[in-house]
Amino acid sequence: MIYDDPPVPRRAALGLAGGVLAALLLPGRRAMAKRVFPADGAVDFVARRQGSVVGGHRLEFAHADDTFSVRTDIVLDVRTGGAALRRFVHHAEEIWRDGWLDAVVSDTDDDGRRYQVRAEREAGIFTGTVNGAAFTVSGYIIPSSLWHRDTPESQILFDTVDGRVKVIRSELIGSEDVPAGGATIPARHFVLHGGIPRDVWYDTDCRLVRIAMIGRDGVPVVFERQ
Image (cartoon, rainbow, N blue to C red):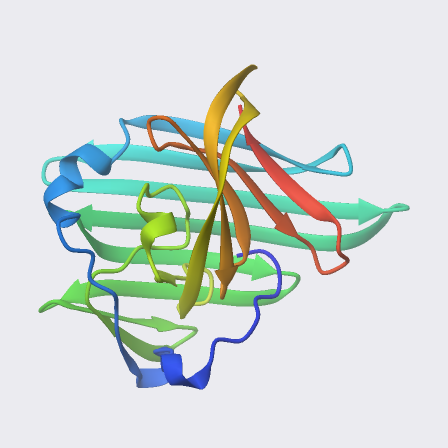
């Protein structure tokens, strides 16, 4: 979401500008929809780089009637020697209905590069635009916001920054104790390889508690749950 992602092979047929990608179906997962969605409320992460705070990340969850919404707000302002090195601002809202991602609206400023994504599910097809260019995605999809407990089990993620589908491969590193909310808790550590390279940690209730990624300058940025 924040740093350059390696290109996805052409064979993956990314659905930008009118393409269609048959997304991976996750058998049995849709029946678990009510259980996989977090409780209402906000979760905050602080971003650190070389020990310095460089930004924050907030997730807000809300249930209303037959929908579930997720709002993501990320701000990074990385400076070195007083000079701006990296600025990333991302706001997105996801709407879920009956366990399916039903709509996404996002606005992103990535070092001056602007992305605006508008998409919704119509007749079973996820259809939208990014900066006015149309795309469609078929099948069950999970967004790149990483909160969803099935993220490590997916082989594709819908990138809410640029409206593209990214192919990933998950590797379980193991169980680790990580700081979260002023305590140290056990969590499972996964590495996501491919289109959205990340290290992610989920606690025993499958809640996202930590994210790490490598910047373009090779220095990691770590988001820790408050």
